[in-house]
Structure formats: structure tokens, C-alpha cells
Image (tube, rainbow, N blue to C red; front, side, top):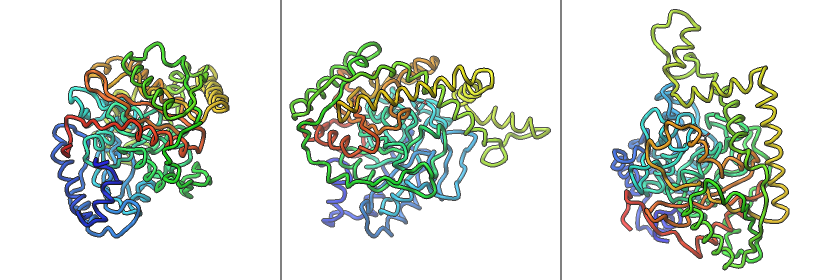
Length: 480
Ligand code: GLN
């Protein structure tokens, strides 16, 4: 692979063809050059990153430039969460996942644009302007980790971190033609990830290949004493699982999800991907996920409930922005939140507060938690007859900027294939599998059992070997 992967970078560094300093400088240049067009970065750390690159010694990611979503804390850089209420707030510490990347030799080059507090599927909810899709700059990159997806798709960095609460890594990965992985809940520390829906949030990765995803996951995984929800589960040697052999692997296809609402072209491209697996010797079986049709409703109750509680801390006292000229404490709170939060965040805080209110708790929140258990049980049952499940990642390719901004429900329906994994806590990965007639990327999603990222990555990697995705976006830092 001659593309901008960690793999090729490592080879170029090892042969002495280039140095960490050169690589990082080129990445910073590209970030700056393309930002006027793509708006993927909210902060580019020119001097800091160049200086750190000069000090890189060794490690699995020595000299690899990394971009980090602006809701993941990195000391010395801002963490705005795409929100005016945090603005250029600088956290006093670094998130564990970013810390582990840095310890492995990676150099953080900047913070990426995202939907405000990671709420959105198009990146249009950022207080700092929408991110543009490098395949067609009139279209959205997906969200909420749009900036990170674009930074990797446009070959600015080989690796970026994002967060996935209901699909925010996988969906923008699909719309931008890169690999996006959400680990099992508890695999990667959330310490230093600004909380949105704490029972759903996971930090995930953007890369150009499944092999690179395995490399990065290896570095960031594992128990962290600073996050009690990380599990003490062994982290396998992911690279060792990338054998290219999927003979006999059982691939579950939930046929019922391939109907209504799914774009015909997306469907056809994903069907072809299933045939690739069949040709490789995998066994394709039908599975049922009978409660999947409630997933959007359940997700948008649980996620908003948790968000309304998590976002209570932004009161104008503890962090960032405070409204001016408030006569007394309560109006200071009110004005700060009124001026500091955008429309989508306010909508969710109100929805979440409503579903948690004493009069409606049983009807909405409790009911949603019950159905969440059923969704989880659906997967447990399905994984009795298969090793991984395959679906489209997103029902459509990248849509036009502004196309769905007035219709929150249409926007929420983008997440139909991705939210179930967060509700169940299982891992998922989106892999680019082709282009639509308009030249827009299509992603397939693979889902696996809890802690079984290894099988998922083995399948993804085998697919890439058999049917490599070699197209590049129109806006791209490197020539083909
Ligand atoms: N699009 C979903 C939402 O708006 C998922 C967001 C996410 O994964 N952070 O909530």
C-alpha cells in the first residue's frame, strides 16, 4: 500500500527516506493549507508539534502525526467540544487514549472540528462552522467526528481519534471513505473524553486501513485506573489476527434492515461486499435483530437523558464562557447557557430533562432501558449463529450541506445502523467498500461480540486485501 498509512510511514522512517520532523511538518502544512476549504481543524499546533517531533525517539507510532477530536483533552491545546460555552478552554490534563498515543511516539498536530458536544450526524452543529466533505465540498462529512474523518480522508494525518456515542466515528468514516472503529464499551478509557452519553461513549479511531486500526487500537486499549468502566480484559495481539483467512467464518446478515429507508445504490454496493466475503470462503447466514427498529427511539431517549445530566456542569462558573452583565446568580446561569449552547444541544437538554422528569420517567426513560436490554439480547442470540454481523454503515452517502438541518428527525435516522452497537456495548467498524455513481464513498459496517475486535478486524483486513479501496477524494494533501 503506497498510501498515507502508518505502515508506509514506518517503512519510510525506517529506511531513512524521511524523518519524524519532516513528516510532522508536512502534515502541519497540509492541515493549514486545506483548512480554508475543509474546516477540519479548530486548532493546529504548529510550533508545539514540530518541537515534539524533533524529540520523538521510538515506539509503535514513532513520528506518526495524529489529529484529536476537540472533545478529547490534550494538555496545552484547547478543548472546545465545538461549543461556544467552552470556547478556547484548556484542560489541565491529557486523556488516557491520547496519552497512550503520545507515549507510543505519536505527535498530536491539532484538534478537530466536531458537532457541538458530539451531537449530530453532519458536523453542521459545530459553533465554529461546518466541516466539508473532501469528496464533494458541497456535502457534509458526517458527524459528529467529521473533522477527524476528513483529516484522515484528505491524507492530512494517517490517524485521528474521534468519539462514538451512536455512530460518530463509523458514520463519518463511511461518508468520507476511511476506516472508523468503535471499540467494545470498556475497551478504551474515556478518561479525558468530555462526557455526552456516558453509558454509550467510546473513543474510536480513523485510519486508512484495518491494519492501521489494529495498530492504533493496540496502543490505546486496556484497563485504566482513571476510568472505572474500563475492563480488566486481556488485549489480544490484534496484528497477529490479521491472517487474511476468513474461511469458515460465519457472517450474519440482518436482511430486515436492508429494506425501507436504505438507498438502493448503498444497498447494491454492500451486497457486493457480502459476495466478496462469500468468495473468500466465509459462510453467509441470515440473522434477526427484531428490536432494532426501536433503536433510534431508545437511543435518543437514553442519550438525551444522559446528556441533560452531563451538561449541567456548564454553568459559567467552572469552565470557559460566562455571560456578561447578569444581575444575579440564577440569571447568570440562564444567560450563560442561553448564549453558550447551540440549538441542537438545547433541544437535547430539554428532551433529556423531560424523559427523566418524575411524571414521564417510567413511560420513557425506564421503558427505553428495558428495550435496550432486549436489543442487547438480540445480539447475544444472533451471535450464537454467526461471528460477525454485516450491515451498511449509513443508509445514504454524504448528503448536501443544509439538506437535513431543518428536520431533526431525518437527521436522527442517519444513525439507524450505528446506534445499536452503542446500546449493546459491542464493537463496530466501518470499512469503505465502493463509490456511488456520483463518486461518493459507501461504507459497510461489521459488528462483533463484546471484546472480539480481533475477529472484526480480521474480516475487515481480509476484505481490504481482496477488494482494496484505492480511490481518493478530490481534495487531498498528497498526490496519488
Ligand atoms: N449522531 C448521533 C447523535 O447525534 C451520534 C453522535 C455520536 O456518536 N456522538 O447523537
